[in-house]
Length: 176
Image (cartoon, rainbow, N blue to C red; front, side):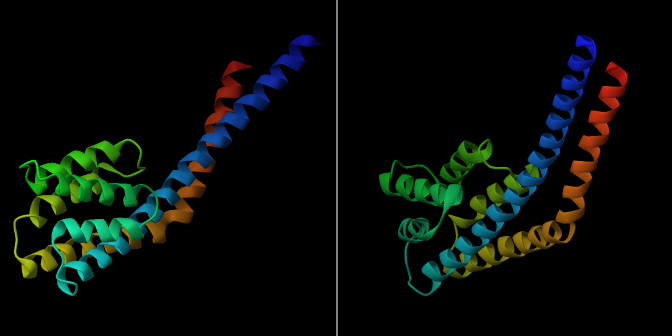
């Protein structure tokens, strides 16, 4: 009798954990989509600051960072403050370091991080026209990633949940 209760409790806990894991990955995918959308929004603002307000990179990142939300806001704000310190570092170096700091806290893929770093490698050395083209190129990449995520998000979330439930059931069957 006690063994059956323990097995049943164990099976319930395993299934709860498996379902929770599937939902975690689904929520992580949704968070990735939101972060990429916020990054895209802030890049449009950055483009406007550079081209129309004729702001320096430091000013532009500061102004954009103050209008952002979440971890992307922090990234832009940190870059702005490092630009303000004027320690002789290149923009590329600052951008890569700040991107690395946020790497673990953001649910982004390696491809997302690589594209962010590529953006920073190009932006700091150019005149305004080339900065605009660099921003537009990165915006195209973001639009493609966001479109892909929107298109496949529901099926991937269902897949995560289904696989986690199947894995939980498999584990329960093996253990009993």
